[in-house]
Length: 99
Image 1 (cartoon, rainbow, N blue to C red):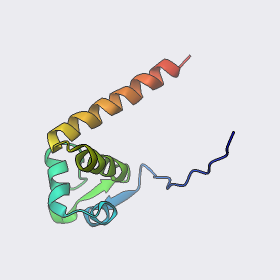
Image 2: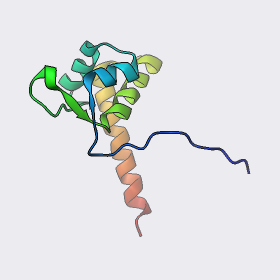
Image 3: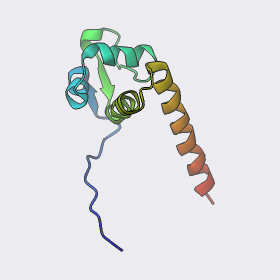
């Protein structure tokens, strides 16, 4: 059996990321992040767009949304549905693993 090292970043649920940090990490424009917010994929923690911060968990969600859109050609509404279904699958699998 081969031993593979996993490399990643642990995200604290209390940590936040700014819109510009999401744009930088995803190499995208703020208009795309706005589309994710309008579709309910991401939820900002402030009302004013200039003050938007997101939970750190939003970063991998945005990256997954980007992969679905880029690699599979899924539109934003389809991305929202796919992410919701993937989360439901994770929840159901966790339920099955409980004793």
